[in-house]
Length: 307
Image: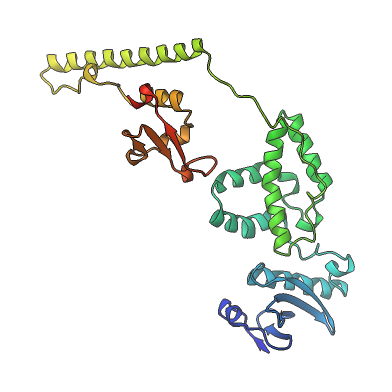
């Protein structure tokens, strides 16, 4: 059967007792093979009994299938056979890393994961040497060379592992979606790091100096408000609120004190809302969506934090 491919058509294809093919009238050579099991694949043919699978329907988009089919046919016209066949690889039809990230990976990642902006930044600024290489041409040796350069530039092993983790996700998706036969990172081992790390606590002296600095800032702001109100009083203008009668001059000191007494991270502290506080139970509930571990926590309040 020949027809113009569309998403409606793809959604309507059903398995039959025997395999069958549906050919695209918009892109010569492109067809979909539907198996009795329900498995559907994009395929391209360039001569009698010569065809190859491009990828699974649903994993590869229709536009990607058309682009790859066009590359196969252009190669066949120029060389007699597609380079992907003569070289026993998908090199000629494989997208560049840059194109795969922008057109396929990031749209999916942004829909399914938090922190996509950080991942995009990591990918954009750390893998420039291989961005214009086709996916199937990238080797583990090249990735190790990039990582070595990071270490020479002063990156710690843990940082290098995190950066490599970002590109690992790209290759894993490319493998699952049929763009790669194997990930180039399969034989690249992570750098060894101290998994226990180092916990840094403020000493008593540091804690006291921090508190003293907060108190000094509060007194400075109160003195500035006193001066401003004296100026306004002399000119018979409305006075600003008296900071001497306020428990705190602004948000900074209470936020620091809560953090010191509870261990809340900055983002968790900024995301707190009134309904997160239970003053009767003396607890703060930190919702999972606002935490690093994506797990809701209930933190007890000591006397100072409660106050």
